Image (cartoon, rainbow, N blue to C red; front, side, top):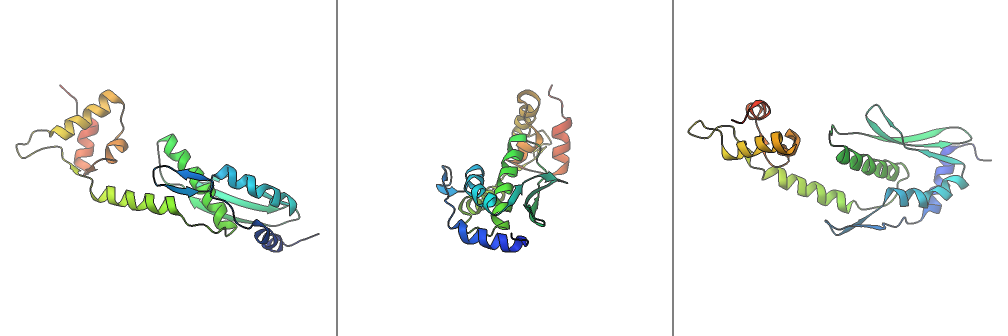
Length: 181
């Protein structure tokens, strides 16, 4: 019986072969590992070698921990970003579960969807217009009033607005406190 988790992981890595990227991201036209498929492909090999995979969220970190049932463990973790939207947070958790596991087992993969998404976000952030509270005549700008209405009447949050505009602190405070007449 093997006693060393590193020997077990070495043998597991030799058996893994290539993990198929089986899901297509329609927006970026790229393939990626679906976390459920990835775990499904790994589970028989983990079981064969007496290894247990846990992926808890502790202290604002997503962790992948492989425990040797004979003793010992290894882990990889990533800090969660501060996200209020539950759907976005769920997506981040799934993404981090996949990548901590991929890192822990040294699975070979090109991060097609992650690289393209990062580039798109950087470009979008660079070109976001600045939202101003007042125009040259010291009146609330049309964009400001539209954003304030989106918050008060359509349930949008300041984070929703920040996805489309760069906002200074004064404008943000006015946006949160401004009352429509």
